[in-house]
Length: 355
Image (tube, rainbow, N blue to C red; front, side):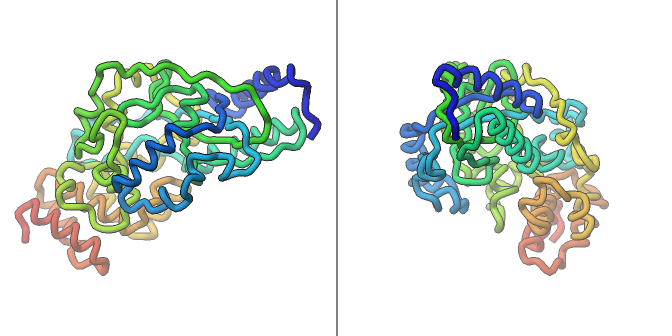
């Protein structure tokens, strides 16, 4: 490509920021590719087996922490943020306290963010090429071996909190991240300082003790892992603590003091759909596979599959207040053709004193 003069790079970044804003991004930052410290942290985490059955976390070796090996020619990463807090959704805390209802992580209430953010990043890349000429690039949205939070931190979008989520002091942590790897030698942004201080609210609230130390999460104990990534049986020791969380967990974010500054998203694609911000568990458990497919079309809720969905709702029904309707609902699935579903239904019925 024909490179602009060196003095033009900073002007180009400002134009990129303006383009990103017009495309619906709430903020972008520019990071370099040095992740040596994070690489050591990742390798220790993997050595401790804290990734559980997420074998893909180790599959690509060090490409995850070495962007230029993952995408040859990469010298910078444009890290982008899109806020998703659904301001018009049912109250999260009230839903968690109502054992008759299922709680779905707020990020999954709307359209699948992977598709939304990826599409916008590709548009951004095309607009950048209009300004700077052809460039080498690749877009990622939680779709490859990328240390997205470390890159966003280095790009000045926030700091990694004790719960290991990224926090912006002006916007909290309710946002998605996406990355544009590029060969443009753009000037980098400075990381911000950390502001968790002595707060331990996220460690204290975690239902399963997954935040085993500040800045350390054991995925094997995390409800998001157990209800989304884990494909088999949920360990019995965690089932009661899962409560009515049927897809993910937001507790560590709900108690974070910085989220009082979070603003509701202006992105219509992230608005709740199908009333899933406070759904009745009995209704959800009665969905046929075709109903589930229709209600979760274009949604991140597809991740655990239909059987994983029934498994999760069965656990939540086991934790629900005992009633004839709950017991009858569980009985309807007691002879399901899936051993996974039968196991969790059996556990749930036993919780209600039914053998």
